[in-house]
Length: 455
Ligand code: UDP
Image (cartoon, rainbow, N blue to C red):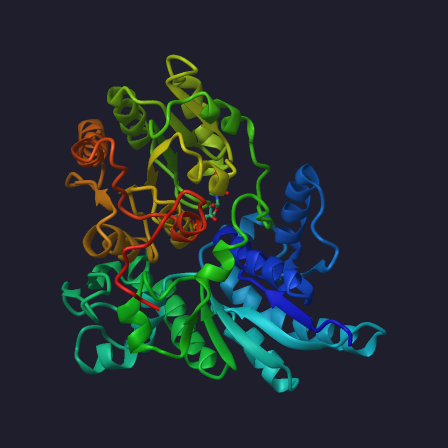
């Protein structure tokens, strides 16, 4: 029998393309054939970055359809991309599926679409194809989305999503504390854009319920409260985790692997890894506070500074700041993050708390320092600091900035606490906030497992 043919389509941003590509890689391991659909712009970037690494398994075919915008300038206008995608891509996707299904190859029998692309699920449904929605964020964020009608009825937000008063919600005891001003749609600059984002979310939340499967890059152990409240969301994080450690594809930037050699030379548990994902940017004063804070820790650090950030200004920031010595710090423009986080030299991860970064850190047992910017990052911070207790947040000043002294103090507090704990049981084994459990369980030195007997 021929291999089943699945079409996978992510939202065209880095934090969505990587996990959907990881899922595609897992499916290929299980005998599926994959057509992976990016927008033309994303497709070019992925191909360029892949050229650096060697090509993917040829059972994953990469194809592109237009996103409906003419220029990079247009893509930078908030809301434009989402609007154009909705206008142009459904027709293009339908055309692509018709072409494939009319050709000699195996027809598409399932579409796996990003949860943010409800229209792709609609296209599949209309064509009589089975469909799965894939959530790249925490289940908690979709549970909150499903609650929107109740939030309106309870007078917490109005019909445009605007919070009526500032308050903190917790939907279940093991769920994050959610401040109404941190709701994904409420953290955008203007009301018109907020309305567009809120409207699209409400529509997507309705459409994902029509999917045959709704899966999420998370685990029950991390989010029992969220999965109990919405049992239709199925956690597949462990499946993706099995593919991690380096074979990951779908990157928009070429990885600078030289940092792994530098990490090899650092003592175990000594390096602060600093990375803010694919979007977050700094002002120059904030950059300087962070650079000074890192210097003051007197610990080695590995810092990812994307060169594209803020129209190239990162490049100028770096000119004025170089770690004093190569042993003190390394700056790279894009790291092989999953390999970095599993490296024994890493002590902690100073992160913007994107969901992928959070899951990657937690699954490698690396404690976090949380510097959220927008979207779901504030909820993720609450999971890390309040619920799982595997990290610390920073205090901000009235303008929202984080000072160098605060950065140094929190690094010392986080790593000092860990050292203190491990000192107390010195010679008996390390105490960690969160272990890479599958790796630990399968390690030859493990004799037995004292456990709470979760399934
Ligand atoms: N990433 C990487 N190298 C870097 C920085 C980030 O490979 O130098 C990857 C990271 O491993 C994660 C993704 O980019 O899989 C970022 O996703 P996340 O959800 O953390 O943040 P976003 O970019 O969506 O804000």
